[in-house]
Length: 200
Image 1 (cartoon, rainbow, N blue to C red):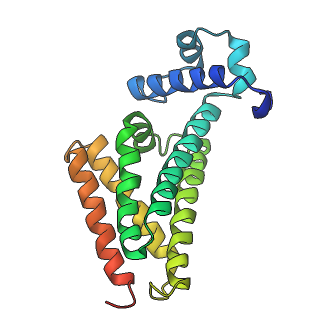
Image 2: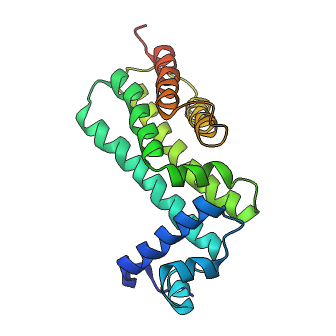
């Protein structure tokens, strides 16, 4: 049973996360046993299990940190930009740049779906956090009178679907560059913004 997070040594936990990230990106999640994460970290077996229950738990921690990183990147931008139309569009740049700057995490995100129910639940939690954040921002635009009163879930989910597809094209298919991926995502977001705006 892992020790409570508030009592954990941050450097050790971070080292385990970094080693898992490197190995998952290099070998794939399925082909990376916990033993290799432990060996690469230089810690003992007990240390790993003080921080994580199993391999799925460390993946979940990576995805949780990734979603927090994405959301904090968006929040930082939104503090600066007050124009809701610009903010809605340029938020996409902030999101996709976080994905692009964290290629290993993006690769794991693109490749682990369908491996197991536990992993799919981790991905669902990750995506639900993003969709909830997108939904709050759209609802804010509606409340402020900038956006039409639309059904929010389809819009928020379509934003995530396009991001996920473009990441797949960049990471897995290698059919677009990082820059093309970002620009396509922004272009889609701009089209959505035009449809949402009250004063078109």
